[in-house]
Length: 216
Image (cartoon, rainbow, N blue to C red; front, side, top):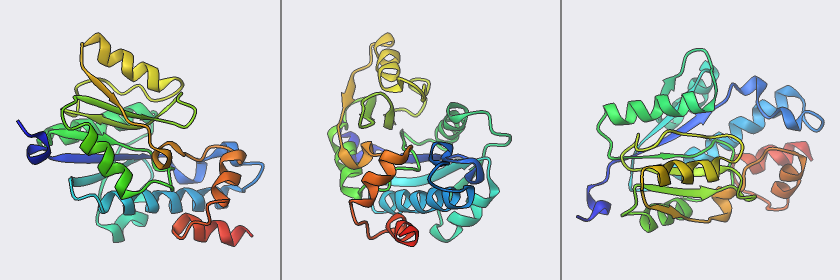
């Protein structure tokens, strides 16, 4: 079977409450600026996903109704998670929705990877066509910055500390083949001051880049 032709892929983007996001940047940015940064990065991630032809649907999962307003012009789908109970609960909600809508695969990506490109996402999908689980680790290979599951609920999400190894372990427990695809843009999330400084060196021409230039 050629999964490339038969896959219906739903991208799931969990988003924290903007006004309380990126607290590790509190010494560099006030709450308003952190919210604006989170908004800009989210829009850049959605823009990259919308360019990927193999993705049939993009679902943003959040407990923040401000996020629904922000993404309205993008015409992606918003799924309200209710009272926020953590990242993995939000991801499970998105996976359950993808399964209910009969998507054959789900791609979970974070909202804070503004260097991601449609080409990188396409490469991830293409190189994992025949795998039930595919993972792109974070730059330190501790976290998971992209998780492709075929079908959407084939393993439980285990985002958080050491999630890269946890996801591999969960797949191994079920004897599922895992494809690891390293990708610099997907791997580059923004959590602390060093990440922010590194981001500035890229001279981005996207929403995140425009926000960073307002800081200068």
